[in-house]
Image (cartoon, rainbow, N blue to C red; front, side, top):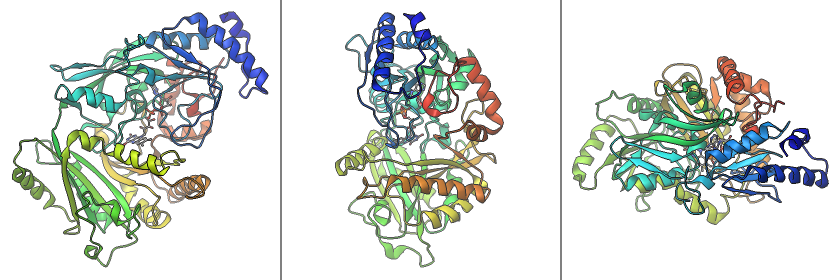
Length: 525
Ligand code: FAD
């Protein structure tokens, strides 16, 4: 069967249905011969990812029971001249990064932790090691499940994403960033061991000291070097409660000064546990304007408190302080007052609520439910995520937030500082050059579907305009969750890391089987 597969050249775009049927029937036989423990499905229709901008149809979707199944599939694929394989986490990419047009999809969620029925047990179990403060979790586990499991033991991971319905392997392949990253680094800095199935079909355990090149390659590696089937995630005692606070600025320079002061507090100094920020429109627009800031319906935004000097957009610094259920609230108030007393926000434009740690981490789930109810969740999401150097963030603010996006984007426009020294340069993540501080900018559009909202092509064009504007003005930026179509663009993106990235590819996936949706390397024979 394998010899037969070797002779079959699968065209990029089979010319007709008959040709595709032939290919699928050959593939079906090959996959049947593998006798994997999981399941295989042959989709009849194309599908989209969260971005909703691309439609592709894989030849087959593998629902593996564990790493061995994945290794067998990769081994089979390596014997064909042009088949590819993409791990699909929760399909929350924007630009088809987890897709494999006319290739095979590995559905990582089928290995998720609580799926221990149907023999899906080996890779899915989630082991929390209380004494050593880590959890071993499946690469297809959702972070929401990791949280659910760990808090049963009074523990929780240290570094998060804002939204938890993302998979462990999917965020580790990018970085995984949220308001805790200034202290603990991204999620990629908070794992100590990985199990990976490489593009050569080998199952390899790796750490900083053992098979370290593979360990660092796959972290932020855009799925190019191997499929993460297990990860050892560092834990901390789970906070019980949080005080969630938002304060408003009219001046970008004061917003960044305060945000940077908070993220650079020396270890041991009193500080907050989470720092993010966002830009909003200086208007009563319900989505983009003042109402997007309030946390408590009983405490609305009072626009008379905005300084008359304010421009078209305002800035919100968002911080969180952990506290215990039984902590005296006046003690928490005192810490908050001491810290916030040093900040220069518009006095009285301060909003706060106390809620459980789990509810805080699950906050975007609430937004998801609302967006699902009004149809915005299933509409296209032409998102743009950037890292911007500290040197250029003020320029970015005046060119982009205050001009191109001064009317908002129909969703959050995040901007907050991160600390380079918390990001290991041996990983595959690309950051803009500059000093220790750089900024995350995330343009998270949630427009209603066209024609109620703007045509998605216009929003894609606006993203392009933003990038061209940055280029024209010499701003030092890098795409986060990058998306390019040509090798030359990737080469520019990676800059002086391109040679290392290519060498890693040659070492761990020499036939370029993995993650074709990233469009970095063409499949080799
Ligand atoms: P997918 O989109 O399925 O996969 C992403 C890439 O990784 C693909 O190339 C895929 O082939 C590869 N891959 C998937 N699983 C594995 C694996 N096990 N091993 C190797 N490669 C794999 N990101 C942040 O950093 N911070 C945030 O706060 C944040 N919030 C978000 C909120 C929403 C609503 C959404 C939709 C996305 C958000 N993201 C955030 C982006 C998120 O990190 C990416 O979408 C990421 O790709 C994870 O999604 P996923 O698990 O669905 O992976």
